[in-house]
Length: 239
Image (cartoon, rainbow, N blue to C red):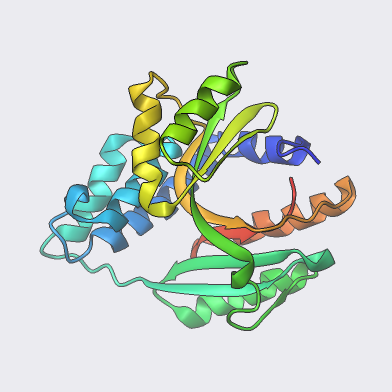
């Protein structure tokens, strides 16, 4: 299956809807607040905050929203008290799921995640049951421009891990610590528009399903992403 099947396209278009975009911004703002809490809010002094800001920019989050989230976290009266929790489990057909959450109520989050999985034919696993299938990597996605050789040259010279032509886009993978350097290399070469630019988890191997089964798994992933406490859902479905 192509890396950009109709389900991936639908998912991307869904993210452009104002209501959905607002929900994404709220989730990222929570991540920014957690990363900035207890600091002076300077991303140059906080690699974790810098990476979340990159994620925010990748999702076209306005600068004002980013700064407001930082200001809220570093304010004298900040009452931010979110806890990071990761759930691991499976969708139908053995598709691995890694579900990262930020919550102020672990019991509520566990109940919502478990019930959503069950409703869609999935199930929770034990800690470590699927996380070994994923690696943390920088991901830079650029719209295809019929100049893949040039893109690959930049990626190689910046010590990227891999550079792939996916038809509609080019995807560059990096070591997490080298992500910002690789991105800067592209910017220095006049490439400043990215479809994606963030450090995330990438499955070592992906599983291709029929369109019908892919839709069922994507419905589950969408339902998990609709939970306010869920910040990211990683999977090994080939879409």
